[in-house]
Amino acid sequence: MASRNIREKVDKGWIHAAIIVEILGKPADYVDEAIKKIVDTFAENKDIDILEKNIHKAKEIEHEDKKIEIFSAFAEIEFLALNFSKLIEIIYDYMPSSIEIIEPSTMNIKIEDANALLNDLATRLHQYDALIKKSRIELQLLQKKLEELEKGRK
Image (cartoon, rainbow, N blue to C red):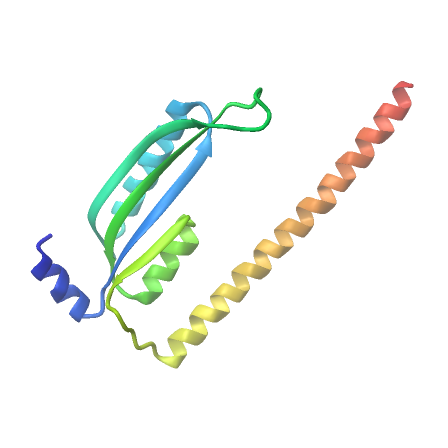
C-alpha cells in the first residue's frame, strides 16, 4: 500500500501498528505451520490491512534440561487497524510479545470507549486469574493423589 493511502486511512482514524507474534512447540514443522496459520487468520480480518509480514522459521531454543526439545517461531506484521478498539482486540486475540503504534502520534479517545476497553480488560484479567487459581487447585490435587499412590507402592 502506498504511503499516501496509509496517510489517508490514518487521517480517517485507522491505527498504523506493528506486532511480533511468537509461538513455542514441537516438532519444528508443526510450529512453522502454526505461525503461518496465525498470520493467515490475522490477514482474513476485514478491519485490518496488512502492509508487510515476515515469518521466521522455527528454531530450536536452548533449555536447561537438554532432554527437552522445543522450537520457537515468530512473525513480524505491520498493519493498519480500523481503530483503537480493534487494536486492543488484536492484543487479546493474538497476545503479541511486542506491539508498536507507528502512527498517529497522538490519539483522542471518547470516555465511553475508554471505559469499555478498561472494563473488558478487567473482565479478561479476572478470567485469567480464575483459570490460574483453578489450575493451582487441580495441580495440588494431582500432587496429593500422586503422593498417595507412591505411599501405596511402598
